[in-house]
Length: 468
View 1: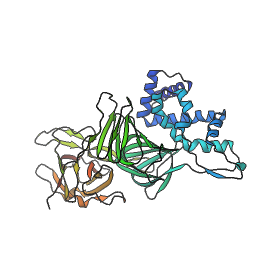
View 2: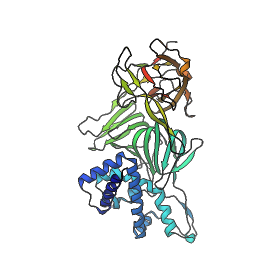
View 3: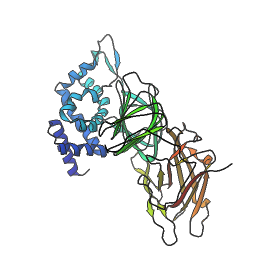
View 4: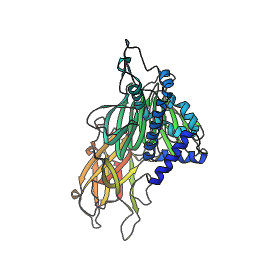
């Protein structure tokens, strides 16, 4: 963020709390917070300071009083700081923001949950009050592939991947297309976030999630009557009583695939709703004129071949090169973040990706499936190929990888090599998924050279089920 941007953001934030934000400035701030994580962090710190001033002037007393945080000295109990700012600060937000901007920034304040109540007790409680504060740990990180960052509003840290960890309400950020993270609420609800993703988690009387971008698979346990799990994205809101489904979201649209159960989806731009049942899909975008309906999703074909006769879709990565001088159409590898070291320094691979779109999936896998890749390099290197999969119903199915030295394939007359790998040789990257299920779908294919740019070019990819 440039110094000019910093000053502009500070002016907008001051106008928010002063209640003098114009419609145009409101839209600008809404877009800024939606698309810029640094701006969201700055906004959060600003609101933390503003909330601190409110505590000092007595505004906290009425909020804490309504939640009955304190108990008598002879009846000590744990107090879990689960005060939901999406509810408790509603009078404050309604004074500062219009409903539209409140949707965009309200969940940013959820990260304050783990900070405000302990801070209040430290400042206003005493040793003889009988109040004991327990950490606001609402969710367990079960497994992690790649690099994750967790922020609870007061601090940021990188969870490890070697053991389960309890986490407070906060924001999860994943780096890299091949990253994934599995989390579990105490009632058994499991959430898997994958890809280059950002999601926020909170829990008061209900589970509340916000998927800013990326893919999220949820296996939601039966929720209490009147207290559904609520998930929002930049374009949609869904309420879940108990079901298995997958969401893929970005700033322009949200795709919902229901594997089992029923989910009600609302398009935020106009409030239109649709119920999505087993094995069906719906898409909510920013276009209120687009048809929004529940449609049945068919299984992908058993074979798939990509020859790059046309530039690949924008959701895929790689530089397209048209055929020239006897060379075929092809895609050249580009730098991509695979993960980060503890220092924060990115680990950069060079490669290409192919992935399923919102309305299509690449290919169905079977035990006899074989991957074939035709490629060339400017030097010798090991290749890493990763398959990201979804189970037959659509939920996350695990990531699987194979490594091959380029020296294991011979050059043809034009300098190209052909690599053939049976599905059985792909190794699991997460213990929970020991191997691809028969009938699972490929949602992501990555081909890259590990931390070296060796001029990788790919002209053909094929996955086909072989006849025994």
